[in-house]
Length: 286
Ligand code: AMP
Ligand code: MG
Image (tube, rainbow, N blue to C red; front, side, top):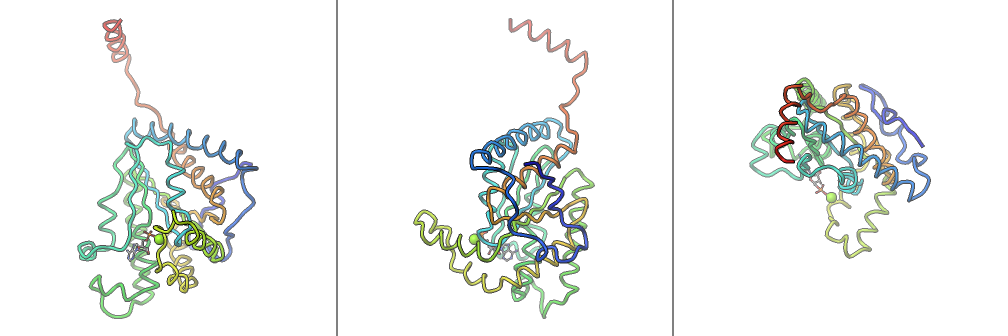
Protein backbone atom coordinates (compact mmCIF):
# COMPACT_ATOMS: atom_id res chain seq x y z
CA UNK A 1 0.00 0.00 0.00
CA UNK A 2 1.35 3.43 -0.94
CA UNK A 3 1.35 6.20 1.61
CA UNK A 4 2.54 9.78 1.74
CA UNK A 5 5.25 10.37 4.32
CA UNK A 6 4.14 14.03 4.50
CA UNK A 7 0.94 12.87 6.21
CA UNK A 8 3.00 12.38 9.37
CA UNK A 9 4.56 15.84 9.43
CA UNK A 10 3.66 18.13 12.33
CA UNK A 11 2.46 21.57 11.23
CA UNK A 12 4.24 24.51 12.84
CA UNK A 13 2.13 25.81 15.70
CA UNK A 14 -0.33 22.95 15.37
CA UNK A 15 -2.46 21.94 18.35
CA UNK A 16 -3.00 18.48 19.84
CA UNK A 17 -0.16 17.18 17.75
CA UNK A 18 0.12 14.06 19.90
CA UNK A 19 -3.21 13.50 21.56
CA UNK A 20 -4.87 13.87 18.19
CA UNK A 21 -2.55 11.37 16.55
CA UNK A 22 -2.70 7.58 16.69
CA UNK A 23 0.11 5.35 17.94
CA UNK A 24 -1.07 2.75 15.45
CA UNK A 25 -2.48 2.99 11.93
CA UNK A 26 -3.62 0.47 9.33
CA UNK A 27 -0.34 -1.23 8.30
CA UNK A 28 1.27 -0.34 4.96
CA UNK A 29 2.22 -4.00 4.36
CA UNK A 30 0.09 -7.06 3.90
CA UNK A 31 2.20 -9.73 5.57
CA UNK A 32 5.59 -10.22 7.15
CA UNK A 33 7.05 -11.18 3.75
CA UNK A 34 5.49 -8.17 2.10
CA UNK A 35 7.04 -5.99 4.82
CA UNK A 36 10.47 -7.49 4.19
CA UNK A 37 10.11 -6.85 0.44
CA UNK A 38 9.12 -3.24 0.88
CA UNK A 39 11.79 -2.53 3.49
CA UNK A 40 14.52 -4.10 1.40
CA UNK A 41 13.47 -1.95 -1.56
CA UNK A 42 13.60 1.11 0.67
CA UNK A 43 17.02 0.13 1.97
CA UNK A 44 18.29 -0.30 -1.57
CA UNK A 45 16.95 3.10 -2.66
CA UNK A 46 18.45 4.72 0.40
CA UNK A 47 21.81 3.15 -0.29
CA UNK A 48 21.82 4.53 -3.85
CA UNK A 49 20.77 7.99 -2.71
CA UNK A 50 23.45 7.98 -0.03
CA UNK A 51 26.08 7.12 -2.59
CA UNK A 52 25.02 10.12 -4.66
CA UNK A 53 24.97 12.30 -1.57
CA UNK A 54 28.55 11.24 -0.95
CA UNK A 55 29.67 11.70 -4.56
CA UNK A 56 28.15 15.16 -4.95
CA UNK A 57 29.31 16.43 -1.49
CA UNK A 58 26.79 19.25 -1.60
CA UNK A 59 24.55 18.31 1.26
CA UNK A 60 24.60 16.52 4.60
CA UNK A 61 21.58 14.89 6.20
CA UNK A 62 20.89 14.92 9.92
CA UNK A 63 18.25 12.49 11.18
CA UNK A 64 17.09 12.92 14.78
CA UNK A 65 15.22 10.23 16.71
CA UNK A 66 13.27 10.92 19.87
CA UNK A 67 10.76 8.84 21.76
CA UNK A 68 9.99 7.24 25.09
CA UNK A 69 12.00 4.25 26.28
CA UNK A 70 11.32 1.13 24.17
CA UNK A 71 9.74 3.26 21.40
CA UNK A 72 12.05 1.50 18.94
CA UNK A 73 14.74 4.09 18.22
CA UNK A 74 17.64 1.62 18.13
CA UNK A 75 15.81 -0.99 16.04
CA UNK A 76 14.60 1.59 13.53
CA UNK A 77 18.09 3.00 13.09
CA UNK A 78 19.55 -0.51 12.69
CA UNK A 79 16.99 -1.64 10.12
CA UNK A 80 16.66 1.53 8.09
CA UNK A 81 20.40 2.20 7.86
CA UNK A 82 21.34 -1.45 7.34
CA UNK A 83 22.10 -1.10 3.63
CA UNK A 84 23.97 2.17 3.75
CA UNK A 85 27.74 2.17 3.30
CA UNK A 86 29.13 2.35 6.87
CA UNK A 87 31.52 5.06 5.67
CA UNK A 88 28.58 7.24 4.73
CA UNK A 89 26.66 7.20 7.99
CA UNK A 90 27.53 8.09 11.57
CA UNK A 91 25.25 7.28 14.51
CA UNK A 92 25.55 9.10 17.84
CA UNK A 93 23.58 8.29 21.00
CA UNK A 94 23.08 10.98 23.60
CA UNK A 95 22.47 9.85 27.17
CA UNK A 96 22.83 11.71 30.42
CA UNK A 97 25.35 14.49 29.88
CA UNK A 98 28.75 14.28 31.55
CA UNK A 99 30.05 16.96 33.92
CA UNK A 100 32.22 18.34 31.14
CA UNK A 101 29.25 18.51 28.77
CA UNK A 102 27.15 20.24 31.40
CA UNK A 103 29.72 23.00 31.64
CA UNK A 104 28.85 24.02 28.06
CA UNK A 105 25.67 25.47 26.57
CA UNK A 106 23.02 22.93 25.74
CA UNK A 107 23.67 22.51 22.00
CA UNK A 108 27.40 22.08 22.37
CA UNK A 109 27.83 18.32 22.54
CA UNK A 110 25.64 17.71 19.48
CA UNK A 111 27.46 20.30 17.38
CA UNK A 112 30.61 18.23 17.79
CA UNK A 113 28.85 15.31 16.11
CA UNK A 114 27.23 17.00 13.10
CA UNK A 115 27.62 15.23 9.75
CA UNK A 116 29.89 16.70 7.11
CA UNK A 117 28.59 17.20 3.56
CA UNK A 118 28.22 13.86 1.83
CA UNK A 119 27.28 12.03 5.02
CA UNK A 120 24.19 11.03 6.94
CA UNK A 121 24.34 11.73 10.67
CA UNK A 122 21.90 9.97 12.97
CA UNK A 123 21.18 11.24 16.49
CA UNK A 124 19.68 8.65 18.82
CA UNK A 125 18.23 11.23 21.25
CA UNK A 126 19.55 14.75 20.98
CA UNK A 127 19.36 18.33 22.29
CA UNK A 128 15.60 17.79 22.28
CA UNK A 129 16.07 16.03 25.65
CA UNK A 130 16.87 19.52 26.93
CA UNK A 131 13.24 20.56 26.46
CA UNK A 132 11.74 17.17 27.35
CA UNK A 133 13.49 15.20 30.14
CA UNK A 134 14.84 18.45 31.59
CA UNK A 135 11.36 19.98 31.49
CA UNK A 136 9.92 16.96 33.30
CA UNK A 137 12.78 17.11 35.83
CA UNK A 138 13.60 20.84 36.09
CA UNK A 139 16.01 20.19 38.99
CA UNK A 140 18.44 19.03 36.25
CA UNK A 141 18.88 22.67 35.29
CA UNK A 142 20.86 23.31 38.47
CA UNK A 143 23.66 21.14 37.12
CA UNK A 144 23.71 23.48 34.12
CA UNK A 145 24.32 26.49 36.32
CA UNK A 146 20.73 27.70 36.04
CA UNK A 147 19.31 28.62 39.44
CA UNK A 148 15.66 29.04 40.34
CA UNK A 149 12.53 27.56 38.87
CA UNK A 150 12.24 27.68 35.06
CA UNK A 151 9.35 29.57 33.51
CA UNK A 152 7.52 29.15 30.21
CA UNK A 153 10.02 31.66 28.85
CA UNK A 154 12.93 29.32 29.70
CA UNK A 155 11.53 26.67 27.33
CA UNK A 156 10.43 29.23 24.76
CA UNK A 157 14.00 30.50 24.55
CA UNK A 158 15.34 26.98 24.14
CA UNK A 159 12.84 26.35 21.32
CA UNK A 160 14.04 29.54 19.64
CA UNK A 161 17.67 28.50 19.97
CA UNK A 162 16.89 25.12 18.43
CA UNK A 163 14.85 26.58 15.56
CA UNK A 164 17.63 29.06 14.76
CA UNK A 165 20.31 26.39 15.03
CA UNK A 166 18.45 24.12 12.60
CA UNK A 167 17.82 27.05 10.27
CA UNK A 168 21.55 27.74 10.24
CA UNK A 169 22.21 24.09 9.39
CA UNK A 170 19.65 24.15 6.59
CA UNK A 171 21.08 27.34 5.06
CA UNK A 172 24.49 25.73 5.03
CA UNK A 173 23.63 22.49 3.30
CA UNK A 174 22.49 20.22 6.12
CA UNK A 175 18.99 18.84 5.73
CA UNK A 176 17.35 18.03 9.07
CA UNK A 177 14.62 15.44 9.64
CA UNK A 178 13.21 14.63 13.06
CA UNK A 179 11.21 11.57 14.01
CA UNK A 180 9.16 11.21 17.16
CA UNK A 181 8.32 7.54 17.62
CA UNK A 182 4.85 7.75 19.07
CA UNK A 183 4.25 4.83 21.41
CA UNK A 184 1.24 4.11 23.62
CA UNK A 185 1.73 3.59 27.33
CA UNK A 186 0.15 0.11 27.04
CA UNK A 187 2.57 -0.92 24.30
CA UNK A 188 5.49 0.32 26.39
CA UNK A 189 4.25 -1.91 29.22
CA UNK A 190 4.22 -4.92 26.87
CA UNK A 191 7.75 -4.15 25.68
CA UNK A 192 9.11 -3.66 29.19
CA UNK A 193 7.56 -7.00 30.21
CA UNK A 194 9.14 -8.64 27.17
CA UNK A 195 12.52 -7.27 28.27
CA UNK A 196 11.98 -8.79 31.71
CA UNK A 197 10.96 -12.13 30.26
CA UNK A 198 13.86 -12.48 27.84
CA UNK A 199 17.28 -13.00 29.46
CA UNK A 200 18.91 -11.68 26.27
CA UNK A 201 17.10 -8.39 26.77
CA UNK A 202 17.88 -7.99 30.47
CA UNK A 203 20.83 -5.77 29.65
CA UNK A 204 18.43 -3.29 28.09
CA UNK A 205 16.28 -3.15 31.18
CA UNK A 206 16.67 -0.08 33.27
CA UNK A 207 14.77 0.15 36.56
CA UNK A 208 14.68 3.92 36.07
CA UNK A 209 12.49 3.44 32.98
CA UNK A 210 9.69 2.19 35.23
CA UNK A 211 10.10 5.32 37.32
CA UNK A 212 9.82 7.52 34.20
CA UNK A 213 6.56 5.81 33.20
CA UNK A 214 4.94 7.51 36.17
CA UNK A 215 5.62 10.84 34.47
CA UNK A 216 4.07 9.74 31.16
CA UNK A 217 1.59 12.63 30.95
CA UNK A 218 4.28 15.18 31.73
CA UNK A 219 6.46 13.72 28.98
CA UNK A 220 3.59 13.86 26.50
CA UNK A 221 2.89 17.51 27.39
CA UNK A 222 6.56 18.39 27.04
CA UNK A 223 6.75 16.64 23.67
CA UNK A 224 3.52 18.22 22.51
CA UNK A 225 4.82 21.73 23.26
CA UNK A 226 8.18 20.98 21.70
CA UNK A 227 6.97 19.34 18.48
CA UNK A 228 4.65 22.13 17.43
CA UNK A 229 7.12 24.87 18.42
CA UNK A 230 10.09 23.38 16.56
CA UNK A 231 8.55 21.78 13.47
CA UNK A 232 9.40 23.94 10.46
CA UNK A 233 9.58 23.46 6.73
CA UNK A 234 13.38 23.58 7.06
CA UNK A 235 13.40 20.93 9.82
CA UNK A 236 10.11 19.05 10.05
CA UNK A 237 9.01 16.75 12.83
CA UNK A 238 7.30 13.51 11.88
CA UNK A 239 5.05 11.84 14.43
CA UNK A 240 5.47 8.17 13.59
CA UNK A 241 2.90 5.73 14.97
CA UNK A 242 5.25 3.30 16.71
CA UNK A 243 3.12 0.58 18.31
CA UNK A 244 3.80 -1.46 15.17
CA UNK A 245 7.59 -1.47 14.73
CA UNK A 246 7.46 -2.64 11.14
CA UNK A 247 5.12 0.10 10.04
CA UNK A 248 7.29 2.67 11.82
CA UNK A 249 10.34 1.47 9.89
CA UNK A 250 8.52 1.83 6.58
CA UNK A 251 7.37 5.35 7.40
CA UNK A 252 10.82 6.51 8.53
CA UNK A 253 12.65 5.00 5.56
CA UNK A 254 10.12 6.47 3.10
CA UNK A 255 10.44 9.94 4.65
CA UNK A 256 14.25 9.85 4.38
CA UNK A 257 14.07 8.66 0.77
CA UNK A 258 11.60 11.44 -0.10
CA UNK A 259 13.86 14.06 1.47
CA UNK A 260 16.97 12.87 -0.38
CA UNK A 261 15.11 12.41 -3.67
CA UNK A 262 13.87 16.02 -3.44
CA UNK A 263 17.50 17.20 -3.47
CA UNK A 264 17.73 15.99 -7.08
CA UNK A 265 21.20 14.64 -6.44
CA UNK A 266 23.41 13.64 -9.32
CA UNK A 267 26.90 12.34 -9.76
CA UNK A 268 29.45 15.07 -10.53
CA UNK A 269 29.69 15.92 -14.23
CA UNK A 270 32.65 14.50 -16.10
CA UNK A 271 34.03 16.76 -18.84
CA UNK A 272 34.76 15.56 -22.39
CA UNK A 273 38.48 16.08 -21.77
CA UNK A 274 38.33 13.95 -18.63
CA UNK A 275 36.45 11.21 -20.49
CA UNK A 276 39.15 11.20 -23.17
CA UNK A 277 41.80 10.94 -20.46
CA UNK A 278 39.97 8.01 -18.83
CA UNK A 279 39.73 6.23 -22.21
CA UNK A 280 43.47 6.63 -22.61
CA UNK A 281 44.14 5.21 -19.15
CA UNK A 282 41.84 2.32 -19.93
CA UNK A 283 43.85 1.38 -23.00
CA UNK A 284 46.97 1.18 -20.86
CA UNK A 285 45.25 -1.47 -18.73
CA UNK A 286 44.22 -3.59 -21.73
P1 AMP B 1 18.92 5.28 26.69
O1 AMP B 1 18.47 5.98 25.44
O2 AMP B 1 18.02 4.18 27.11
O3 AMP B 1 20.36 4.91 26.66
O4 AMP B 1 18.78 6.37 27.89
C1 AMP B 1 19.44 7.56 27.85
C2 AMP B 1 18.91 8.40 29.01
O5 AMP B 1 19.63 9.62 29.01
C3 AMP B 1 17.44 8.72 28.90
O6 AMP B 1 16.80 8.49 30.12
C4 AMP B 1 17.44 10.20 28.57
O7 AMP B 1 16.32 10.88 29.05
C5 AMP B 1 18.72 10.67 29.24
N1 AMP B 1 19.21 11.91 28.62
C6 AMP B 1 19.54 12.12 27.34
N2 AMP B 1 19.89 13.41 27.13
C7 AMP B 1 19.77 14.03 28.33
C8 AMP B 1 19.98 15.36 28.78
N3 AMP B 1 20.38 16.32 27.94
N4 AMP B 1 19.77 15.63 30.08
C9 AMP B 1 19.36 14.65 30.93
N5 AMP B 1 19.14 13.39 30.58
C10 AMP B 1 19.34 13.06 29.30
MG1 MG C 1 16.53 3.12 27.86
